[in-house]
Length: 279
Ligand SMILES: [Fe+2]
Image (cartoon, rainbow, N blue to C red; front, side):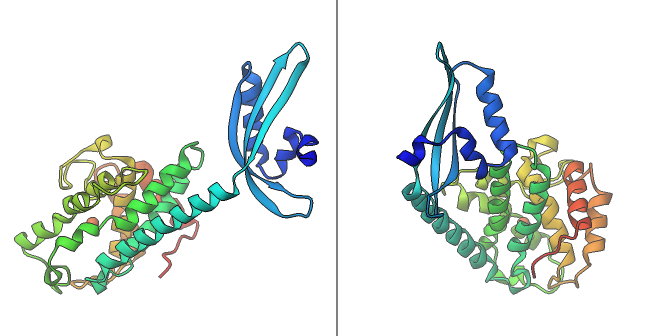
């Protein structure tokens, strides 16, 4: 308690980035009796650290301006959150691997699409206050985007020659099937809808709903680009890998018609900066 009494908001600076801290202080100074709630880390005298929630208010009265801070130790809450997050993560990864286990040729496809889609999203949302959340929704949706292939017969998924029309239609059904599988699973993001839209194309030539332009959600437009790049650069039962250069040429050539121009640009930049699929 004595430690806390001696603290000022400036003591929070050590564990909160200077830019973030300045944003908080500027916000408090702009209005009367405003308050901000944020999480940071405190250090005990012995050097050990623990997570805290800070409720900070700039109190202005005839005594002058005073910062009032209520600091709560949230170690237990963080442990509970972490345990829920880890359970969800292991469930997502298990589902992701499960669908791919039926098709050895696309093993790891969703993981690699997720890596690239996440890198693109991180670039697009770098300055967005809701960025972290959007990046996370892209990462998770990409890990599950082909879950509907579970409903496609294995002989069709692994067929070493081009599919006929009926077989092709069955494969296309996976976008809608993915939505059906995920629509009742609770996620903090619209994962089922993103999965449903990952084969839609800007000009309406995609499926299952022939959506156009901005009516396709941004997360699905990102996954569409990452999906094409990964699929073209990997081996498939009916053709050899075409390579990254051919894949990037495909999205460059069709930017604005099939794929979102801003997303294509971000994808090309991500590769220019050395992005590589993990395996
Ligand atoms: Fe797909």
